[in-house]
Structure formats: C-alpha cells, structure tokens
Length: 335
Ligand code: EPU
Image (cartoon, rainbow, N blue to C red; front, side, top):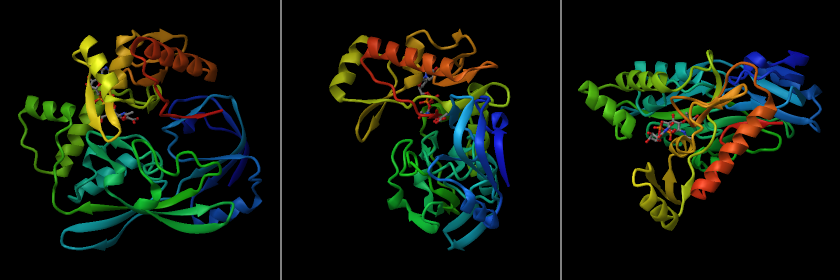
C-alpha cells in the first residue's frame, strides 16, 4: 500500500509526531513492485521497527519505506551449527527468544533489544559482550534504484562498533532477509560486568541460552526505559574511543572512570561521562537523559525535534569541556 501524509508517530519508539509525504508499506515480495511508482530523487529512508530513528521534524518530505515481511526458516545445518534465516520485519526480541528456545546459541546476549531483524546489521547491534556481526552469515537486499537483488557477505558489510555499510547509505538498500549462523552447543559469553555480577549475586549456574536470554531481559528491564511507556531510541550516543595518553590523564583525575580495551584505543562509558556532568535524570522541557541510564535520551511526552537537538548539543558541549571528549550521536537523526 502507498499512503500520503501518513502519520508515523506510532511507528517510532521515540514517539515523535511526524507525517511522511509518501509512505510505502511492504508486506511481501509482490509489494516490492510498488516501488516502481516512487520518485527516488526525493529523500528515502527505510523504517522497520523504528527503534533507532529520531524524527526531528513534523514533516518528512520524502519517501519512507516500511518493511513488514515475516518468516523464519532453517537454511542449512550440521551437527554443530545451524544457519537460520529471518525476514526483516520480524521483531528482533521475538526472534532471539525463538532461537534460544530451540537451544541455538550465539544470540542470547542480544535478548530484548527493541527493533526488527532488518535493523540488526545496520548499526551492528550489540549488548552484554556480543555484537550481531559475531553471528551474521549474510543478508539479501533489494536496491530500489537499480532494481536488483544482492546478497551481502559478512566481509562486504564492513561491520564495526555500531556501524555497517548500510548505516549511512544515501538511498538505502532494503534489507529483506538476514541469515545468522548459530551454534547447537551452548557457548556462554558471560564476562560482561553487569551480567557477571548479576550471576554472582543470584548465585546462578548458567547452562542454557534461554537462561542467559531471561537474565539479560531482566537486567535490561531494570534499567532501560520501556519505549511503550517512555519514548526513547536506546543509547542516544556512542561510547567514545580515546587515545591511551588521553585516558591516562583522565584516569589520574577520575580513577574510577569505566573503560574497556578497543582496537582503536580505549573505550569510555558515555553514560558515566554524562552522569558526571549532571545530566542524568535531569528533565529539560519534554526531554531528558534517563534517570537509570544516562546514555538514553527520553521523551517525557510531547518532545519537539528542536528540544532533542538542543539537549544533545548541551550534553556534547559539557562533555567536551569537562573531559575533552567528542561524543558522537548513535541514534539516526532524521531531519
Ligand atoms: N554508567 C554510569 N552511569 C550511567 C550509565 C552507565 O556510570 O548512567 C556506567 C556503568 O556503571 C558501567 C558502564 O557505564 O560501568 C557501562 O554501562 P552499561 O553496561 O549500562 O552499558 P553502556 O555502555 O552504557 C552499551 C550499549 C547498550 C547496551 C549496553 C549493555 C552503546 C552505545 N550502548 O551501553 O546498547 O545495551 O552496553 O551491553 O554501546 C543501544 O545501543 O541502544 C544500547 C542500549
């Protein structure tokens, strides 16, 4: 179906009011033909779960392609591994739960992340010590300009921290199906500190992917705001990476600064930085950085795009001043 001036407030987890000039809903392969009638000289974005998209204007003067295709199937398997394919419109959290219930491992730490399967490779979603690139096998995409289908291998996606080639495409390719390679043997990855300390606190013996999935779901629910109650797009900023020299200086002044090794330097917890500047839990107009996780910007009700940009800039500036660190926005800001 094609709709005009279509309201997408309920289709973005930040709950921002916005009307799309042209909105194309794609449920199945036949609907792809609808794209023949679309003017691709206009800006075009793909929307699936809408959990990383921040619409800063009340009108999007272009095309929004909304992907809703469904289906999960097994492509191949050996005694040890399984290749499982999910359509982009599948809910990510439900897909993870489906896999762990069959005892397939490799995806359990990514439980309960809001959004769709199709979005999972775009920003290489990651949590609790796992990233989607660790299990990504390939994905089938449709290029709406060239009208061509193409399968992208893991190498071609160029994955990095919250990045892939799909993240900043001018006319985005439609990710149609994603295949993941999971293990039939449980390979626990429990070293992430929030996970390890919860296991210790509960004195748990962890022996199934389903158990990890449940545990991660509980941890997430305890500190991340539910987008159905408080609009948000998950982490608003990326965790910044700084040089070892810069880190040494900061460590002298702030001995408890949370940090992790990374191939490009030292990764610093942006939530902690934001907390140090006093923005955690502070409401400014209709927006604020969440009281339990400062990295998440929330919409207290009627946020306007301008308020989001103003708060983002204030946070960036205060971190620059206090720590000489440049925060980068992780959410997809749409103007
Ligand atoms: N911290 C604070 N104050 C805060 C928030 C965090 O001091 O308000 C400290 C924590 O105490 C901890 C460290 O920062 O020492 C890391 O915190 P946390 O484990 O909550 O993770 P994060 O680095 O803030 C990242 C991802 C999340 C993911 C979690 C768990 C990014 C941008 N975010 O957050 O992903 O769920 O790790 O693995 O990398 C998302 O991308 O939307 C997202 C939610």
